[in-house]
Length: 293
Image (cartoon, rainbow, N blue to C red; front, side):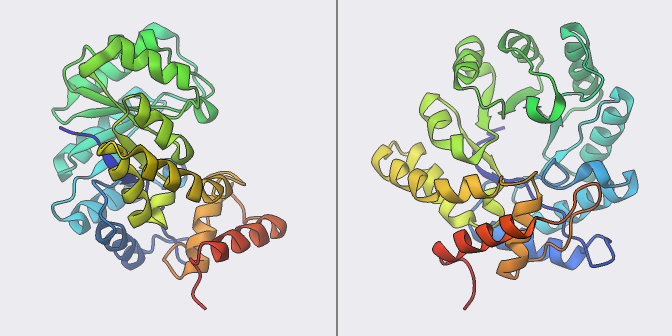
């Protein structure tokens, strides 16, 4: 399976009563698919998976698969409990997910052996491909390239979403793994340099609001049109940064609310965006012509 192109890390829209906005979620999926994305990722970090019950988590997976049509779905199924990760990944497989995106176990801080055994246990329990997700800023632990290389030897571990922010690490992973593991950016503002190093695309927060523009950037890189890609990278760099003024997905949900897309509030412990940052976000969105007049 090819893990490439622009893959939105979808938000989970909520109603004012903090229930899942099913109709809004379907509408958002239609919006990004019409924007030309390669696949979708529901119930990841951006989808507030941490505050969804197991029943809600599974429900979001079901809705995404039904709404995606022929577009691949890479469901977030990671956990810091290996048995729970196996359960969620099996559910995603049975529901028809094309692959599973699995974050490094957080809070527990397992040693290298524990990390390998965790991912191996899940990979062996299912037949669908596994996409690793390394994001030390969320998990408190970086998975070293040497450990990633060991995981790449497992047949159905096929890719990694790299969000360490360390381009040296990205280079080392590609150097060690070669064609055994696809590397995809986990950070919009690093899409251009990571693809220049051999990455295949981006699992994107920004694609929730600018799917067409993100596809143009990644398509330019894929075709080797570095000049156009560079122009697009710098054109949208301010937006990429603004979407992380506060903890993801607070800014992107606020942006979507401003743009008339389904989003609603974040669930506690994530609170509303500060008024100062909200004004900054609004001004940036206006500068890109993203707000209806």
